[in-house]
Length: 128
Image (cartoon, rainbow, N blue to C red; front, side, top):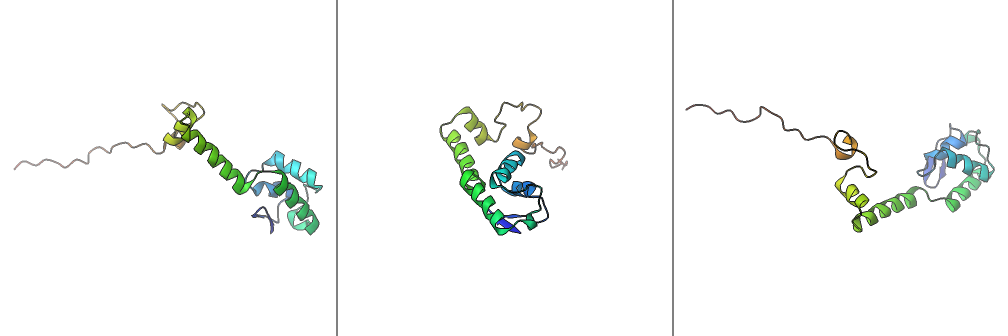
């Protein structure tokens, strides 16, 4: 398996698909990277030569914010929103949808499992 930007790239996939295993690289960006590196995107990763792998590494690591850098930037941006107490920051802090979705009926993913009290578990009163 080839290693690019700290990520193991699968050998049995086409280069254009294998590059998308890196966080921050989707299909369109992968096609752009493969084209600028001068590598055939339809070729399998195991068939790449060492020079082609180095070209891919150079294009990816020099031109794009990926993996750890990208995760840190996203975390920093959300933290900044929370610190300045903007509406979006407060929604992030409360664990609610940020982009204006309704919450009365939906938003189960963000709000978590609903806490419904279970009925019938009270201790029964007995006459003495």
